[in-house]
Image 1: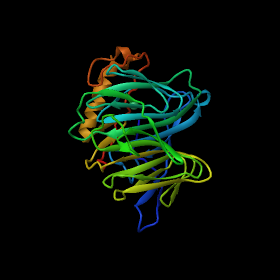
Image 2: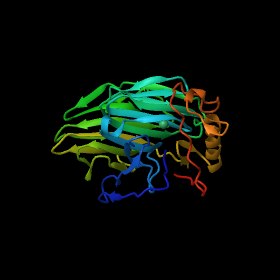
Image 3: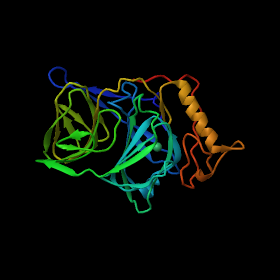
Image 4: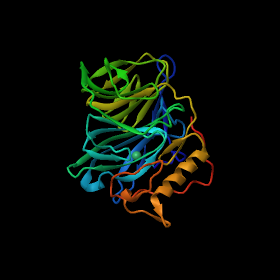
Length: 331
Ligand code: MN
């Protein structure tokens, strides 16, 4: 559910010389769909930046009162060539996928779904959820792994802490902890909380580029300030990033990875390599969810195929029409 070609991106550059090269990527609001249309704040992809490492999609949402937004009601839809990473700050989401996984997504626990050659899934906030607040992230799979079997992993990272900060390392290694979750390229994903006035110098791999998504509070990355929902990009090079809070606590996600290095084509929920490949994925999904010219009303009636069948009575989401222009490679 993404149209990466339309991004009114805004950009602030950090002071030149000396420290790491930094940019602030500002979010745009995107309705997720559904009755009362919960909106998300998207910082990746943007016109001037498609990827940070293999991270290719960053949506930040909430805190939203479910009574006002209707919560998350995302019916079964397909994915290819990526992993989805769900991370919550509050609330709970029910995940069901066509590889047979049914799992709750809860705060402080990472759920990573590998689409590989094809998967479909639904995400619905639970009835007990009052306040929904979190992020939805995508990771592009490299050429050698993008046709892998679909899969799902759940992991609860331990809390690591130091003076003025605490963190959970959900992907990769940082701050003395390592996540066992499978990645197909070198990646980093950390939730980090600074106390009021807290500061931490995080040692980082100089071969990685990083993105710091601010959830709450005003954060200073080196010398550059960022507000909630802004994503601070740091180019490869530095061996550390200094993160500082001021008169309030700051919660953020630190994402990173080796520059991906492969051009990708992203459209709707698919990551591929060519326009024609995406056209094929779309046609295969539409064929699975259509009978006698009508879209099925119950996902359990979906035909077998690349994207499998989600054990969920919600109706499958039809793909939008392809744009007239050929999809462009992003890098
Ligand atoms: Mn999805």
